[in-house]
Structures are given as C-alpha cells and as structure tokens.
Length: 52
Image (cartoon, rainbow, N blue to C red; front, side):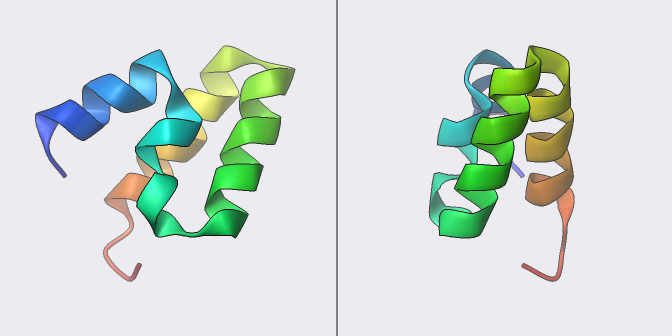
C-alpha cells in the first residue's frame, strides 16, 4: 500500500478502493455517507487486506 493510497483514503475513501471491485466501492461509499470515519476505516482495511 502506497502513501498516496493512504492519503486518498483519508480524503475520499471510495476513490481509494476504485480498483478493488464494485462491492468494495459500494460498501465504502455507504459507510462514508453514514459517517466519514467509518468510510476511512473500511477503506484502510480493504487496502491492507493481502488476500485481495
């Protein structure tokens, strides 16, 4: 995970997980709309997952 992905996930979380698939984008977008911090946490978790 690069520093640019971390910065992007803090600024706009759905854009950081753009290449991880439609499901990830939707989950992070919904969590971001419900609250910014849950969206950032979800994006960082998805980006740190080594299996994806």
